[in-house]
Amino acid sequence: MDVLLDGFAEALRLLLTGDEDTWTITALTLQVSLTASLLALLIGIPFGTAAALVRFPGRRVLLAVANTGMGLPPVVVGLFVTVLLWRSGPLGGLGLLYTPAAMVIAQAAIATPIVIALTAAALQQIDPEFLVQMQALGATRARALLALLDEARLPLLAVGMAAFGAVVSEVGAAQMVGGNLAGETRVLTTAAVLATSRGQFALAIAFGLVLLTLAFAVNLSITLAQQQRAPVR
Amino acid sequence: MSPESSGEPPRLGCRDLRVRVGGRELLAVDTLDVAAGQTLAVLGPNGAGKSTLLRALGMLGRYRRSGTVLLDGVPAEPATMRVAVAGVLQRPILRRGSVAENAAAGLSLRGVGRREALRRSEPWLDALGIAHLAHRDTRTLSGGEAQRTSIARALAVEPRVLLLDEPFAGLDATTRADLLADLRVVLDGLHAATLLVTHDPGEARALAEHTMLLIDGRIRQLGPTASVLDHPVDAPCARLLGFGLLPPELTGRGLLAARPEHCRAAPGEVAAPPDGLAVPGTLRRQVPLGGVTRVDVDLGAPGGSTGSGGQLMCVSSTPPNAPPGTRVTVTVAAAHLRRLDTDRTINSRLSSRIRRVGRARRTWASSGGMGVPQPVRQAGRTRPSPRPPHDLR
Image (cartoon, rainbow over all chains, first blue to last red; front, side, top):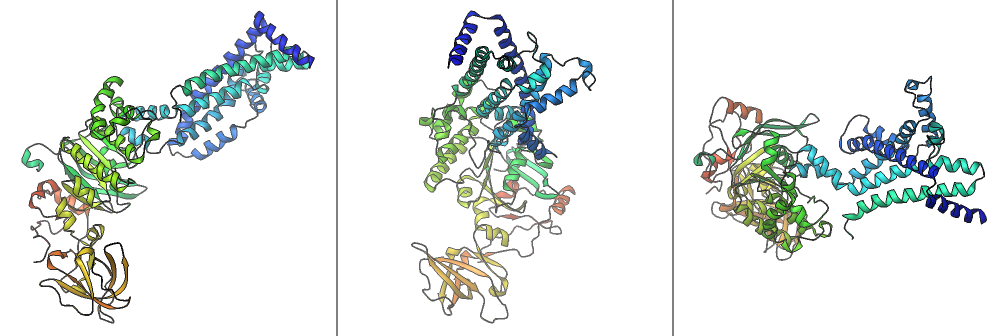
């Protein structure tokens, strides 16, 4: 019990005193995870939309791959990205390994399949005649497509939350491609793992609490945006 | 009024319009014109291509189509068509939000500002009797209310071409009758060319000046509504309109058709009414349907050389009241008999060649004034003789 109580006390102290290390780690976590989520949305939404609306060869394979990818172990992604970015690897020349950029790449790779699969599912919920009806009201194809995405904005915001939740909480890939370098690539999850392994439970709990608060804050703001115009039944 | 006589080109039209899906031709319409301020009803069985025609004319969806769609007599581009057209689909597809926002959606999609769009769509909520629902969330609407919203949304853009794809499907009888009346009033005030796809001849009668029977993607019959609905030109058209068929072997004067309510079945031998028809048959069953009785008769004399003459349905308030298997005679008064063409085939390619060599181009609008349905002619009979009304007097 003491350990837990100490942990909470330590966490509060770290947060309230504005411990510089903690804030650096938190800021980097936010930066990496939000960038990765954004990247995943930018790649995943078009693919998910195409998979939902267009019949093209390999469409069902893409969806099956995306659905499998939803359960992709971060460690496996970390491994592949590490191999790709390894000094002698195909992209080794970029010198990205053990940088925040590498972590963004790995986390985006984790989140993209989630975004594709959930976007396709969200859009397939909408009446298949929706686009025709919008066109029959004078919308261009692009405008009709925007209306479709707007119509699906509630599930699409949920897609954003799922993507952010997946990347902010993962540790395997961040550890492997980032290396947990203090002040450079250390994020809340890897910091918590390190503290735990050193027996600094109070510190680890502090990081855990910060992580939870962060995830809650981001999801709260998305949820507020999502529910703002959602009519109550 | 025919477009030729008013001097302005028909609002909506097409030439050689074809739609193919997977190598199958779903639609082949050579010539069609709808004048501004007029409504053309498109009747046809399921899968006849009615919705395909509507979408092809509106350049909606992603059908592979060939041919020309004409807007005001000029070949239309998708961009010009998009601005001219408004459509109501079978299912009311509304967006999240209030009824008022949805009614304004068509204007918004055309780039009208939100406030202006709401202002301009407001009268249409009134016209369709849904002004009191303006602030309701669309997901709490009944089917009829949702369809009214969808119609108000289409009308609010004041379209030059209005496409209605079975807008009354799935509504209960009362809702439908009310909506039909409201729509009739609205259409009268709208100078749009309207295409109404429907299953129901009653809707065509109520809303459309002209009616087209579309079967297997081809125009089978086209003319003023009353005349098309009452004078089918051939067996498929007659069947579509609910006529019973009387085969030539039994009538002795060609293939005839009559409505079930005009066929009387009576036991034994009965003399034909003056100039009318009496054909023998066997009672198959009679089903009381509240007030009237449906009587199904297998046509043909027993063991007669003509063999089976098919089935005929009679609907009457004075049924024969005889057990199944009883010999009956079906009589039809002369006024209710319709003579059908037996050798019509629809060949769109040949008829389009006829047009190309400059023979009289037959559009329903230009031939409509005679009050006589104009069958689509076969090749070789390029000079159609005005046919007298088919009532064989």
